[in-house]
Length: 272
Ligand code: NDP
Image (cartoon, rainbow, N blue to C red; front, top):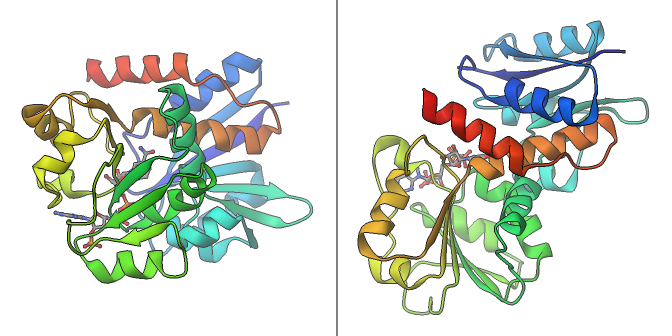
């Protein structure tokens, strides 16, 4: 029997989610229908309710509705609670509409695929918006030595670090040394900006991960590659990883294979 899904967003026309989930469904031989659903701030809640009443098994939620989805869900996962944001909705018999945030596991799946081990490592996470909030719990689960958290607006980083011994909000750079992994979780690139992190620190890091993805190198990765040659990865693998975790939740199956799907989405991106 075909199961029905959609992704809510605005804009939504360029979302790769239907393509990604169709590729996952092919791996398992699942019958899936997955479409893009444009919504507005005013009709998001009523559209979610109506479509779940009709036939949806689950949905993804992207900008700008992740916080609204969090408020709408009857139950939320610990990751979603930390983030205050939901990117995956699941219709469940036991918990009603379950809200999950799969960004953190999506990032971990990608880092594992890239052989980036977090255990005992010094990590610099740049940004304290929804994406950073969504991945912190999963990053901590991997037992890094420390996560330095830097944000343009320091109060947000301080609030996130409060009460968590292995997260340290950064207001000046002097204590930040020996960073092995830098994760850019800001949207600065969208405006052609760079977060205000010293070049020396970026240059000395072993691995740079930018959550943003693009057909060519992101502005942040282009900048790093001008000053040094660390391994640089963009967030396309995280996008596919978070989708894989949504898929697993909806179908109660093994995690779909991520690698071949990343390659196919990368080809689509390049062709545009
Ligand atoms: P939010 O709007 O919630 O947060 C934006 C963050 O970026 C804030 O920390 C903000 O700082 C910072 N920022 C914005 N502009 C600048 C700038 N010019 N200089 C420095 N810092 C800046 O966005 P999200 O957290 O949801 O998303 C962040 C990024 O992560 C986006 O590029 C998004 O595409 C990407 N992402 C990728 C995913 C994937 O699957 N690959 C999944 C989720 C997100 P301040 O607090 O000071 O405003």
